[in-house]
Length: 213
Picture (cartoon, rainbow, N blue to C red):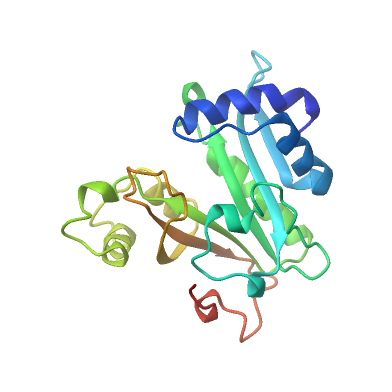
């Protein structure tokens, strides 16, 4: 990502997350300054327009709870908790594709680019939070972890979580309040991870060992 992309990123954010405040140029500049190689964009060749973005930072997961919110994981969207010295986990803070460019494999390409960074840096894993916009229809009948299990077993299809599973992520557990205004997900999300096969976490550093708040 470069400074020339900031305005387009803001427009994509407003289109993808209409209930959230879009990124400001100051926030995007902070991301770029802290970890430039971890902020990815894809560009539509014919028009030159930014089609998708993926923002990441390196964190030390032992400093967090497994059910911390997106705001906590990103230090209020400042990425101030980026820790390239002690951190061993690439945190996927955001992945967005412009509506007119969705369903063309862009999200998967951005995910693969981030995984290449994980392997190049010899990090243990990549972690993120997945919305579950299909869960709102089942909130009265299914516990969130039961819903995740059914999506993993392909008994149910979720518009977002299913796509992440197809892209090689594993869903670990449900957490409440990850994105507080996500009504479609009934306030719930799934913690997802991808383990670096070349540098997996040593025993004792599994996500399942992290406490809840």
